[in-house]
Structure formats: structure tokens, C-alpha cells
Image (cartoon, rainbow, N blue to C red):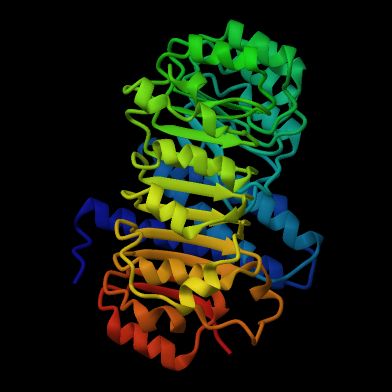
Length: 459
């Protein structure tokens, strides 16, 4: 029996009760056919929150209440009333004394004044704030240290950050197409930045040069941008001695130019062409890539990617490949012997995967891998072959893009095919977009004693 005399037990009970109140109130408003003053109801929730919850519990209570409002977001009722309630209630359950705030399912139509907040993240790339609502809220966030808002950040928002949030350490605005060179001066007002992620924004050419010349590069550990010229990349290599994580896009470059990144841990490359003739960097400079453990390759030919893997693959523990054509499972396995995590998204294999699977002979490949994420358009045999090799894998997330539309009856069942050759004795999680057959479910549950999570489609 729970001892409710203990303060933390009382807090738990009160928290659950408050969450149930918020959820039930939302449900009653949604199902009430008559007119309801949503703003008045949510104002009452906000007032109750401020009056009854002390600042020391602000983060915990807000996080829980946000999850209950997200439960409301899952209700499949459509219409302006539903949208208004969800957005208004989301703002109402935010405690003014909160220090960290993350949004993942929806964003509020208003934000209360939050003078103590140090971290604001929008984790879902499909979520967009009303610009004026966000700008108004940022003006009082004078001790904000982390701001992550991908895809929908703007020059006006950055101008506000540069004026009011000068304590900012982390700025992540990847994919924000409305961020242009006009915002460079605002970014340069943030003198304490240690992480700056601008990849896939409209900052380019002179804007990038101005940034590189004006940033406090001595403290910068994370940096990303696209459309980098050779001269700008030289600036990066010369001015960022402490950089640990970097991602860039450039048309022509070779790995020898990266040799000054002796402390690099994560390297992300997009549309970079590495020539085989330049691939002797590690032999020539032994300290280069000494600490590299994560490599991300996007929109490249696999021949170019292979040249880099041949050089540094024996160092990396995580490999992410996105939109790369004609990938080879054998080449990846042979060049990356200590890989623990393999993620392959929206790629095309080299055409040999079906033959490799048909002639599978339990070759000891990918023995170090513990996590596999593979999502391809139609190369199911590549997925099966890789998983057949990964005898020590613990987490798996695989599927074909077309699976959620029409099940291709000609495609073999991934899990059933893998279990013929690989008992998956270490498996803890398995996620697939394919239909899970009842007999296969029984087999994997009986066989994989460490399995805690299995997701897929049922018919």
C-alpha cells in the first residue's frame, strides 16, 4: 500500500489528479455540443496552476500536463473547436517558472511569460509557432541557453534572440529556409555559442564568410552549414580547433583538407565527392580522425562514400547513410568492423542483396552491431541480409516506404526470413512496417527472451 504520508507520494497523487482534471475538462469541452468559452476555461486552468504548484515543481508538473494535453491531441475529432482547445490548453498548462520546455506533438497558441526558462525545443519538424507569439515570449527569456526550432525559424526570430537572449549557448535551426544572410548580424550578437547548426538554411556565400570571421570559434564545438566553398572550409579548419561535431555540404573536396580536425567526433557530409587518389590522410597524418566515432553521409555516390569508409571506417561506431545510391552491405561490413549502430534511410542497394541472401552462409559480418535502422523503398532483400548477419543486434527498426500503403505479396516476410538464419538471441526491440504474422510473433516471443517491445501491423 502506498504511504501517502510521504510528501513525494502526495505530490504524485496530486499530479495525476491535476492531469486527469485537465484531460477530462478537454474531453468534456470537445464533446459538448453547445457553445463553450474555451479561453475562459483554459484561463482557469492557468490560474489554478500558478496558485497551487510551487516553482520547484514547475518542470515536472508542466511536462506531465503537456503529455495529457498531447493525449487530447490524439482524439480524432476535427474542426476549429478542437484545434482551438488543443492550442489554448497547451499554453494554459505551462507553469511560468518552468526552466525547460519541449514540444513534440503540437504547439500552443500563446505562451505565458517564462523568465526562468533556459531551454526551449520544438522536437517535431512539422510544428510551427505563430511568429509573433514566439517573438513576444522570447523577449523575456533573458537567460535562455538552448533554442532548437528547425524548419520554421525566421530572420525576425533570430533578431529577437540577438537582442534579448545573449546568454544563448545552443542554436539549432536546421532546415529553416526563411533564415537568410540578413540574420547573420543577429547571430553574431550571440557571443557564447558553442553549438550552431545552420544546415539547409538560406545563409550562403558572403553570409557564411561573415559568420566564420565574426564567431567566437575558440569555444565552438558543434557547427553545420551548407554550400561551403573551399576557401570557407579552410576558414573552418583554421578557426575551429575545438570543434567536435561538424556537418557541411560542398561540391569538391578531399579528406586531406580535414586533417586539422584532430578532435572531431562526429562528421556529417552532404554531396561531397572524395577521390580515391586523396585517401591517404590517416597514414600521412596519424592523429587525424583519432576520436571520430560517428559518420553521416547524405546524397553521395557510394563509390565516393566507400573511399572515405576505407580510410576511416575502422574507427567509427555509428554510420548514417541517407539518399546514397548503390550501397553495398559487404563493403560497409568490411570497412566498419567495430560498428555498433547502422542507419540507412532512402538508399538503393547495388543489386547483389538477393543473391547474397539466397547463398547466405553465416559469414561473420556486422558482429559488433547492436542497433539497426533501415528504411528503403523496395530493397527488402538488403534488409534481410543485413539482419541475418547481425547476430548480436538488440534494437531493430526496419521497413519499406510502400508498406503502409499496399502490402506487396511478392515480398518475403522480413522477420520470418531472418529467423531462419539468425536466432536474434540478444534482441530487445523490433519495429517493422510490415504485417506481423501470428506464428512469427509466437516464434520471436519464445525465442527472444530479452524482447521487451515488438511493433508492426496486424490483420
